[in-house]
Image (cartoon, rainbow, N blue to C red; front, side, top):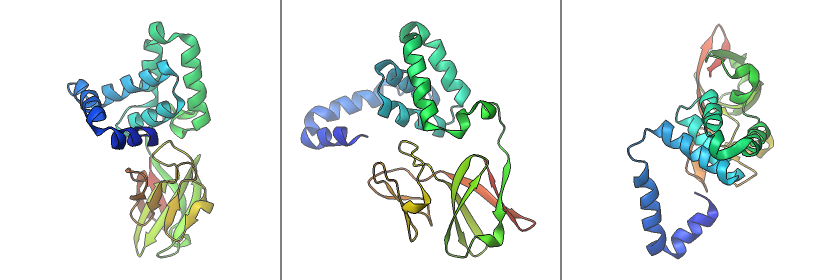
Length: 208
C-alpha cells in the first residue's frame, strides 16, 4: 500500500474501509495469478509507473512468468494500444529484472555457483554477484541464507553500502530488513526474496 493510501485509510477509515473491502471481494473467485495479471494490465492502462512496478513484482512472486505477463499485455492490445504497451516495456527494461532479459525468458531454474563456502565469514553478511544477480549471503555455522539484493517493494537494487551490521535499508523508500532472517523490520511488510542454498564440494550454490 502506498504512503498516500495509508494516509487516507487513517484519515477517513469510514470511507476507505468499504472501498478496500470491495477491491478484495471483487476478485475472490479468481486465482492469484489471474488477479495479478489483471492488476498489471490496469496499471499499464493508467500508466502508473509506481503501481506497475509494485504489481509486476507481486505477479512474479505469485508464480506468473515473464512470458505470461508479456502475453497478458499483448492480449490487452485492443484496450491498451501499442503506445501504452511500449511504455510498460520501457518501465520493465528500466527495472532490469533478470527474469525479463531476452536470454532468460525461457531459462529453467538451476543451481548457480556463487563462491567458495569458506569465503563467507561466519555470522557475517557477504555480498556477491552471480549470473546477473547481486546477492546478500548470511552464514551461521554450516547454514547459509542467500537473498536477492532487490527490494520486494519496487525491486530497487539495494547496494552493499546500504548494509549496516546485519541490517539492510532500501535507499528508495527506506524499507529495512534483518539479513539474518530476511524479514522486513521497518516500513514495509514483505521479506527479502530468499533462494535455496547448499554447499557442494566446498562451493556455495543457490537455486533460481
